[in-house]
Image (cartoon, rainbow, N blue to C red; front, side, top):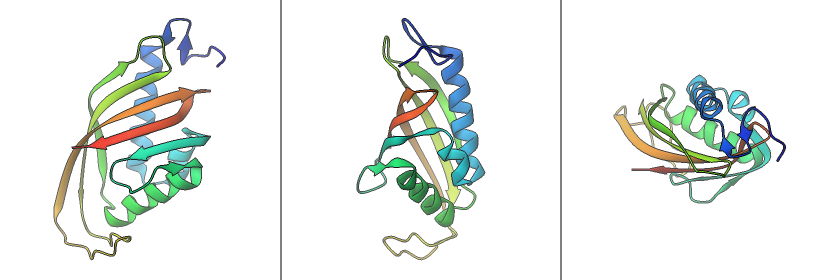
Length: 141
């Protein structure tokens, strides 16, 4: 990986990662898949604990964004802690909270809207390459 604002010889730059997380959160909160896709590589593998299989490439990420936006049109994420950078590696983790109202269909598996409020917390581990996310693992609690 070429050194950029994201990488220094000793690892990721803290300010760059904080900026990336702010852009990642804003993109997800926009409910516009194109904004999220601007922040991922073409070969991203996104392993999200709420989805049955890892999502591959921008098409897989688009599927996830559209799924959540349809079921939870008011979905909002906020960063609670982090980022925590893995020393000497292009990886960082952060702790987040998401909240939304279930007003659209959850399809698959085919659940009708309940109108109930949902809050979930999770941790995300991103791997960065070329200034965007090349791999992502999101675990919800």
